[in-house]
Length: 168
Image 1: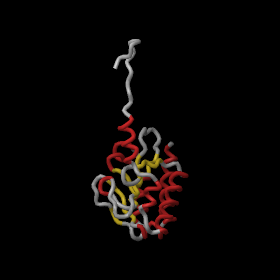
Image 2: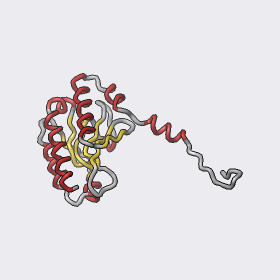
Image 3: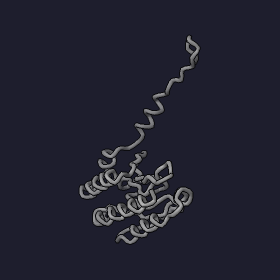
C-alpha cells in the first residue's frame, strides 16, 4: 500500500513466520520425546558435540538435521538426521541416521572420498542398518547402537569434519 508521502510500505505477515517457528521442534522437545534416560543423555551429548564441532543444527517439524559447512558451497550439507523414537522424518528417516544426501554430494562436492569414508565407517558399527532410501547414502543407528557406539560415532563425525577442513 502507498503511504501519503508516496513511499510503498511492505507489511511483513508475522502470522506466517510465527506459524513456521511454532511448527519447528526444538532440542528440548526432541529430548522430551525420548523416554530412555541413557539414550536421551547420549542424544543430548551428541547434539552438544555437533555444536562444538561447528555443525549447523537445522530444526524441522519432527527432528533435526546435522549439517556440515563446505568450502565454496553456500548451503551446508546434511550429514546426519535425528528423530525421536517412533517418529519418521525427512524421506522416512528414523532415529539417528548418519550419511549424506546423494544429490547434494554429486552436485556440490568435487571429491566425495571423505563422505564415502564416513558412511563406510558408520556402516561398520554393530547394529547399523543401511538406509534403503535412494536419495540418502547412510545408515540408521537404533537407540541401543547410539548409546553403545557413542565414541565411535563421534570419532567418525570428527574424522569427516577434519577431512573436509583440509579442502578449505
